[in-house]
Length: 216
Image (tube, rainbow, N blue to C red):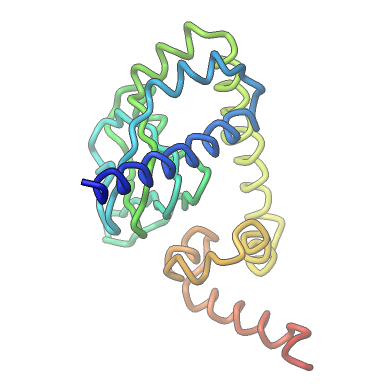
């Protein structure tokens, strides 16, 4: 009996830790009050998902939005010739999902899949949108989130693909996620950067060769 209580206690402590991180992430976009966040908190459910599980299949209508507490999720699509293209990589403290599919209630154009064992916060998108429309603070958070991720970051990424070479894009990715190449298969990183795995291998070798530590 004590072991069961201990396990439940650890589970509650773990969930509370990630609820705090979720709250900090939300407030990073807009300073919502404790009362507004509590309403959002009432909607969340924790999900433990094994590596390589499908969260959303291409052709399905998205009904959930996910916050990555621990692990990694990728969004990818496959062309008519069977080539796979990585649309995005979602790591800790990021929101994952097909917002276009959820908004328009249309089939998703990409697959959402875990590539590590994951602990996720799941939000029912319909209830989430109803809450946003009924709460001014959460509506402001939602607008700020869309502006940051769908306008500012999207534009910066589009410009970087044209104006920066692949080495600079890879270095910037490493600044944000220093351990990404130890966690994420290189083919996913390469696709995310818009290059081939061979090109990425060459870039990594050149960076390692030119690193100051290699000459000490």
